[in-house]
Amino acid sequence: MKLVVAVVQDKDSSKLAQNLVNANIRATKLASTGGFLHAGNTTFLIGTDDDKVDEVKHIIQQSCKAREQVVAPMSPMGASMESYIPYPVNVSVGGATVFVLDIEQFDQF
Image 1: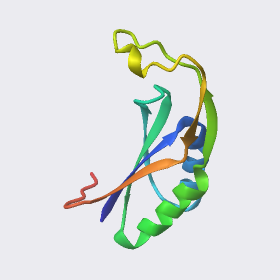
Image 2: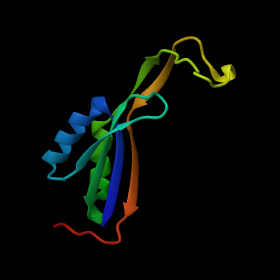
Image 3: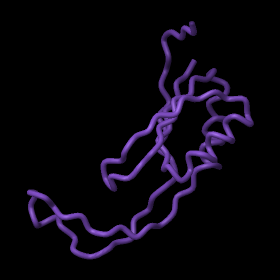
Image 4: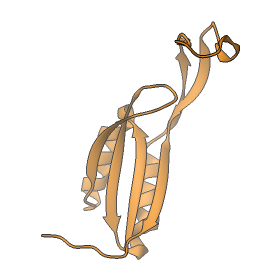
């Protein structure tokens, strides 16, 4: 048994949830916030059999696409001015960060 943890951008969350339901794969959604852009994310917890991990990863990959986004600068608020970028920059957002963990025990009550 495996636990797939997928952190996706909120814009991709609904599509991923629907695609998982269509494939009869159960998941738990958690609201989360990214540390870099301080933007909304959704973290999916998906328990699955070892032989279905590739299918789950494929669904995540097809549902969550990376895109370019212009990000306005944030003031350093007490941090060093050396790392402050005073103009908007393009960053890649979206896609998914996926962790696959071994599960020692699974109980459902």
